Image (cartoon, rainbow, N blue to C red):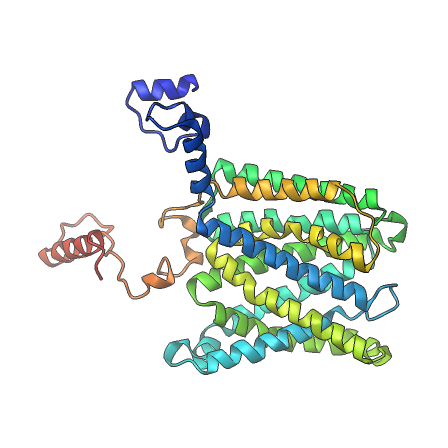
Length: 405
């Protein structure tokens, strides 16, 4: 136990939490083994396990999209139509979730959502479509190493926007967890070099490719934070339905302009159609599950979890593409998982409602709080309160203190 802790006990100061070493050395009658077991059980809660497992399912779905894309274009001369592939996903989202919205009643139905927030979802859809397009295009101009490194910019973008717009306040364990997870990325790239998967001579225009990857990854961060806000303040069905609707419209126009010739040159046999459908289904499931895991945690936590996608791509590549195995992959996978565990040690905080970033949020703190009246603010002028104002203020205070509506 350090001297600061001893001083805190002697002065009767409250400590926010006990470290593992402090728990083991305390004299509460429990054995060391019981204390470790208790600490581990407090870490691996049902909620944390759901987030961890959900993140790995998302990584497997990302792996599915990567594998099907590689099978569609194994030599660089096959199907090269990223907007067309995304178009199928957005179309599925629009059919399923817009249909769901149409069946809803009152203010949650399609008409109400579209009339009140259509322009917001149009912007988010545009950002999401272009993020997909630019990152895929980056592979044609720069190296795999550059894409893997620069794609990680999504995480700091999510952290920054969450801090500014969602009023999230991070603790020390979150920063340490993020750093450890990001250390796993260059280890994964080192494994690619060791396996002979990364070749710099393949780069056609490295500067252009790097710029496309940076902008696309940053757009992913913007889209993820907008998604977190939407699913926690409106609903997952609303977000996916509107994203699918406007994403179909935008990607449809884009594929007609940029991929018209590519579509006419594709050999539309059963294998190609099957792989396109498999890609669309993997991406549809990824988009459908992503907001669910975000509701359990946050956009930042989910982006940390899906850093393991390259590891699963390797496992499939060993059988499908004859990738060379490297033990560094397992080490990098373990590093990322450890980073996620450290990130999940303590929950994030939220800034006070008086924060200057309050403009970006709804009036209610959470969907479940909808309909709960806010406490009437105190008058800013210096006049004396009237009897009616004083009575209303007391009623509001007692209602919120007792947790009643």
